[in-house]
Length: 92
Image (cartoon, rainbow, N blue to C red; front, side):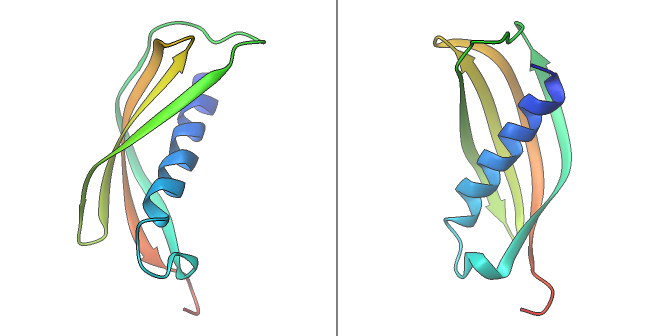
């Protein structure tokens, strides 16, 4: 599995986590601004079941820091820190 797809999975899981914990989530969007400290420890191959775990490390004034980890068979295969901003959707 390409690294960019692992990071995309983390971003989508993180957006789901954050937007389900803010008021009026249907009126919000998340804009990801950076990915840091990404490490890919082992390849993910066809047939592997990937588990993505996201932790909301900090949320302040609409800025969000997330820590993501990807596991295959309880073995850490990738990790990254993601930064994002919560913004109002246009027309909301």
